[in-house]
Length: 257
Image (cartoon, rainbow, N blue to C red; front, side, top):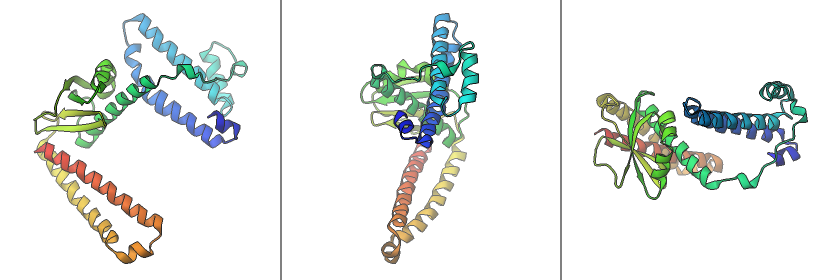
């Protein structure tokens, strides 16, 4: 972001600030720290509040050149009357970068996303508690165990079991998270199997029609030779996307029995 400021690229400055504030701070950290803020442990609650206030104050300083009046008003209330105009502009400290912690948190975030996607795709109630199983190659499973409170809060899971091999349960669906971690979700009691099988069959039928359209173009030599390269590339990309969607639907169909 500092480089963008130096080049007067305010569009890039604003994009990076929005990405951090909404995607990292609001979407994740605010949600992750809620259990601490609700805790009966006064010290834990104080640490969470201090971090929230510190990050917000720093962000306001970063945003001040772009939104001077709004940041001045909020900062003066947050910092008990101090003016943001006299505050030093933040400088990055390389010593505070913890790549291992970032990697672990990305694994937690990816797991929560996989759980939420499964709920949305399968029509599972947002608040229904899930009993997950984790199959990990290395220590990814223990990373989730260490962050079980975050998974309970953001993923609404009831339990997490570390397993050594994929479950034999035919009604257990796999939720790929990373190259080293797969989550498995038993669906019994969570969905209407008959209704979901009908929906998947309908989606597959619609997908086949899309395949016909794309394949007709890819098998048309005149189209491949005369169409612009970027158009042909888009058709190939569309085909690859359809293949991926079909694989997911077939895997879901298999899990539904």
